[in-house]
Image (tube, rainbow, N blue to C red; front, side):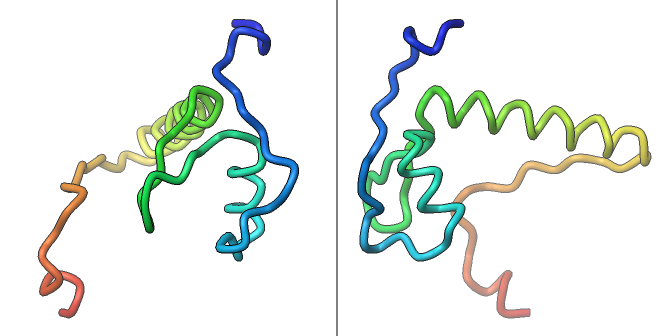
Length: 82
């Protein structure tokens, strides 16, 4: 797919609430879009990058004989307090 066909909106300025460099870069590149506090939408370019990284990690995990798990997005706080 051509870059001109992507739904892509870049930012010239770094948002004030973005403190981590990778967070700033992803926002400015249009990879993610802030929906609410701590909630982000993966935009087409960011989702494409995410899928490629997942593929590489999955291949390495398979080569190591590891297993993949998928956890729910919302979990009880008690699980993390143990």
